[in-house]
Length: 301
Image (cartoon, rainbow, N blue to C red; front, side, top):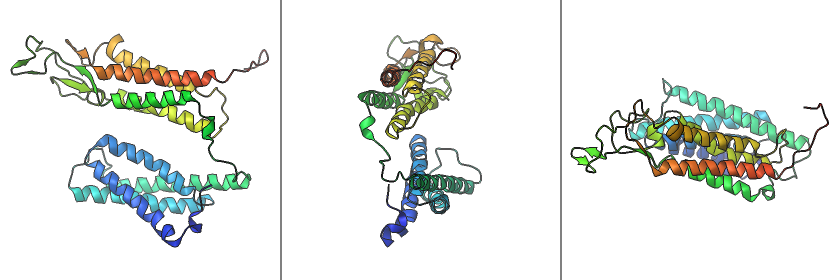
């Protein structure tokens, strides 16, 4: 169990609830004007931070107060730093922007309350001396899933599709097809060259990022010893299968992107992404195979 905040040194009691969320918000505020994906990832990580902060308090009321302070500072410094840099936000912000502070404060209160409530429940059950996580339960198959997530996520930044010509004034390479243009959802209409998954798709890239989370959620369930009504790894295996199917559909089965794709080629990023999705599927398959399914009496669902 982490040490209670009120048991820490006075400096830590002051700085941890204030400086940490303010600094993290400042980093997110800077990234807001630089890269939408990086900003989104860090704001998602802030969710885990809000819950962990609440876990340093005994009870939902103390956790909610901690979340109130942290959430308000986090949202405020996002706006302050972004305004100070003078850069246009790369991600969509609510209008007016001050609503963002309201949202981060509300999430902070909720997450902090959940963390404090969880700690109180553990103490009440007398399990405070039991390890919260047991990494010894992890199997090498989780490593396959982790590697698959890394490969799939990295592939989204690589070229997935390419046109016949790199540019047309003059034609390069010589003899290429000038009618080969990519008119994908996020690509510029009539553009030439190579296009990543982020530049090509409107929804598929987001779905694949969510698929990358599956092996980590599985590992969390395993190390926390949560009881499941299905074999661990089955959902991860299904998520991997769905990711493989979506990639094959958007490149082979349903063809290349664009309303009328002409001479559009699969680039190496597409194959790397397919490999990553297969690895996620294999990792889940290996994990669920470790647990035998017990037979139930006839007539029992």
